[in-house]
Image (cartoon, rainbow, N blue to C red):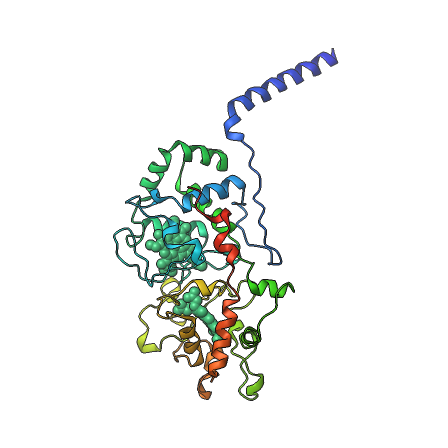
Length: 359
Ligand code: HEC
Ligand code: HEC
């Protein structure tokens, strides 16, 4: 009697499981985690509610290269964020679908998983998922509505299928679009430059690159000129050569500031003319430089740092250099800094098929 009851319960349970699994079959396609290979980098900061999965990253990659995200179906994220330039643009101001220039220089997109303090030059987007929908709607960029991109993608059986594989539903919405883009951008890692090889003992720096490395990482010390450095690591430090902060690096004085940067987001006068400290990895590929693309070459950038402009929010590390006329770098030392910056170029980033167009 007892056994019969147990068997009955099991039969009913099995039937329920079977029916359910048939009904839900397409919803339950198991997705595998996407394994991020980040070598000796610290643990990446990936939002707990959007772990990287193989199908999610694949969908994000499709969307990153998808021209349907623009009103004219002619521009994708990759139009301004080109792999061969470390996912940056070569124009001072990228042109949007109306052929009009934007207001700031494009930014590189790699090692985003190590950017823990918001996105854009002024940090107006908290997470990548917030960031990723802004260019779509920006009239000077892709100039499209969120309703339209959802409708265009929903009409495609390829996308319906890929959203189902990635998120278990073929009902497309803007949150899922933005989460897929977040996953793909978080999957782009750059850690295979000559400098990384040098750290691992697989490459040697030339004497000039070595001198540049010394200047980059050594504090400024006017009392001992021979031991004094350019203190770039003060801001461009750590594995990703940035510090997740918004700072003023002295490209303008108070009178010449035309873009208030971080102040527009926080409303604080103390944030005037502060901008995100960008990673210097791959900087040899990402000219022109600064939020407004004002410097065409790394030589111009280093010339700038040799004697910066004073202003109310200038970083104190530069303030102490001003009374001594700036860093006073020799021509050879300027060239050495530039040579060191070129060791941060990662040719595997620019050629990795995992990041290239899937179409
Ligand atoms: C027309 C050129 C253009 C297009 C198209 C474009 N971007 Fe950008 N991107 C920019 C510019 C310019 C900035 C800097 C804007 C600013 O700070 O105000 C930027 C900044 C970013 C950043 C910030 C990086 C950081 O370190 O904070 C990310 C991420 C990004 N874009 C991803 C995307 C994605 C995803 C798409 C497609 C949905 C896209 N972009 C489409 C030009 C473009
Ligand atoms: C006090 C912090 C600070 C120090 C020190 C500093 N930087 Fe910067 N750096 C920044 C900020 C902030 C930006 C972005 C400013 C902007 O776009 O307006 C920047 C931008 C750059 C860029 C342009 C990157 C791009 O993608 O456009 C390069 C190259 C650069 N710095 C190199 C250096 C070098 C070399 C040194 C040492 C001589 C140095 N920095 C010292 C804060 C700093």
